[in-house]
Image: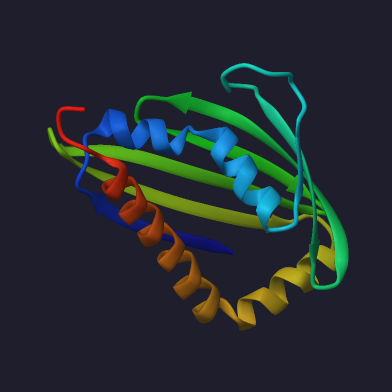
Length: 154
């Protein structure tokens, strides 16, 4: 199952990159939503190989997920996740359209490794239109937030 979205952001690629790689902000956001997030590889700036353990409730069941930063470069990143029989790959690619405009492309692909995970993904496929709409709205909101925080020359 795959979700993808693109958004053009009125900010230079380095500003968008800093927002995309602000992992402490994403950790705080997950905590506010009720997830338990713990960085496994220590403190300091995240780098390729950095990992997080995440625990959260989904559909009335406690789930655990391991997230590993598999790729981190100027043009984007890849985050590999493993959770209760579901493998996920999140790709975030940044493309400079002009000196002050950047396109962000976000995709998430989920694959089942067990029968129960397959059943869960099948139930998600029934709601795919709604989930896709919510995913695209989140990416658009992220883009708007990055634009709002960008101030030319500063």
